[in-house]
Image 1: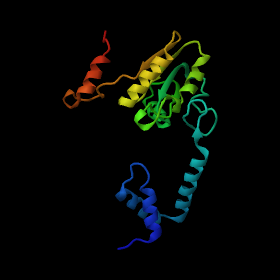
Image 2: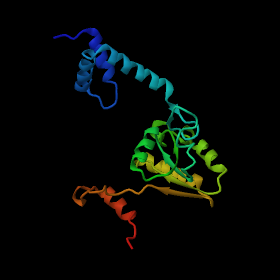
Image 3: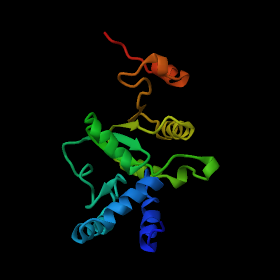
Length: 199
């Protein structure tokens, strides 16, 4: 059976969303065309409004509707801790842990010469501006542990090194509840290097 052209177009557009394969796109499209028209209008309105209102914070680069964002303007957050992440969505993931009470800085990517991305393409100058007037600060680098993440972390540690800046990186190792049996050599090696004293 051939689907109506507008339904085919809807499936194609939904399939462009991350994590939505052809079958999921088809199920979503079929659901939407069978939903009450007012519900679809409300969803459409919310999509457009969100896209128009959500922007990036001028200070940290995270998602916000106001300048500065809620994190940057919260006086209860520790101004001496600055967590460096690659993308705005990484802030949301760290916040879910409930373990971090400082501020954030989004780099907007990682150094990747093979893709033509150098330090000048990232928000490094903005990072330097943010720490310039502080008495002391700890930069917590929270980038992925791939080749580009390691290179970017090393670059930042070298560039920011001075007497009033402490540069640390998130520990890498075994996940909670993980078994040694399923851990790869690199993960085990990093877990051993990042070990902590128990008493």
